[in-house]
Length: 318
Length: 289
Image (cartoon, rainbow over all chains, first blue to last red; front, side, top):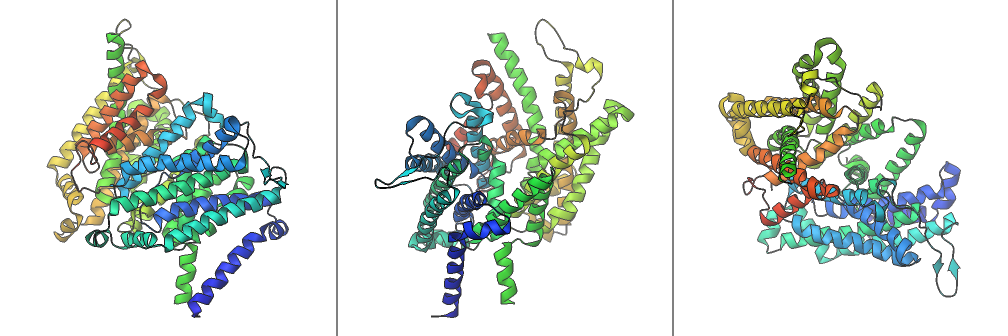
């Protein structure tokens, strides 16, 4: 085994060990299990954004829309269709993914800043729908009146509603599943093609790769992941918020990805951890937390454009 | 019915004119520097609050003259310090930076001027409706349109006939060649940015007179400008002009039949344009796409 291999193996073991044991080491450090759950879900969302941003090189700035759709999909399922947690996750994911597939077909031909602008603008459509259609979505107040249901496995029932640890492990399982699929996709020939497009689109085109179709598929896949993360988020809060669809939420996700390190598979999770913990802390100590978050954006862009992991790697290479 | 429709079309044109003013500034910066200025709405708010602060001393007319250049000066400083290092890097970074900047500006204005809405006093004769029995449009709205028309005309004269304007247009097409011809591209970008922020500041003063001021108002006004640019075609200023008027009229007309959708119609319009003519109405193939 090469050193590169061992290093990767150690890092992976460390990440999963930290995640598995989070409820035990978070509390003594002043955290709480619900915070860890939120980090996981938002981390998954940031990784889904990065699936497109970091690995296909396409700048989508409207991904919160599909996250929010996932949340509303899950909430509406629980409220009106069936009191089933797995079903709500499925429908939430489908809602986000299908919407992404349809809009992706419209925007896959655009590039660069144009792509960013169109994704932002289309993302806002769903924000307005959630905001205006208050008879269904609760409008500005958000969608309330549902809660996650115990998992019924036939023989045993697992209470994930009132037991925070149980719920954390349920979310971790979902996270592992999604991240596993994501990793598998990136290792597949399709994933390699995505990276080829990122590195040199013109060359990929000359090699006969249907670039538009690949970008559309990558966009759609990332929207499915996003919808899944959003559905989980609705379960975390027992609430779906129209502001979860707003482009400022998209900005947060992109920030998490950039802050952790876009070129690294795990970077966005690290970024999400730092971001969520910092925001949680700041909003508890100052009313001007918005300024601090804004300052964080400016500082990261100016001084750590490669993100924390990119920064560490460069130091260790030098 | 016809009268109602006519009234709403006029109204839409007025709103559209306002969108145009804001979108043109955004478009200028986007075309030359490839920067999506998320803080544009923030600069608009700053312009409005500056006008609010100086109105007691210099009156509305003084504020209208002084606030936009002051805003442009702030914009110039921001460009120098924060945005200049990002030229030539992935547009992602300038996008994130201006995004954070918008946060800081919104929170900063709330910190300085408070979260409550602030009215800006306009001259009384502008506040009167023009005619009571036909069109219920205040003189102020007509005044807004006049200011926009004059400003847009001046902008197009600047771009068409002055050396700076010709360089900006040339730079939009091929910045590298412009640089090779000995033009100071850094300076060009700064000036262009300042002109864009000047327009944002002017929009802010005008909006303050109509809507009053709130720290959050910039965010809401940003999206229509985006759509105006996309509908008109990225890279084309006349396109932005057309796009702004078009979405104004479309939302004005929808307000008659289905008020709840008057905001959504802009997005529908955008989707239709992207389907039929992906480069936008007046956009050229290959520009920034």
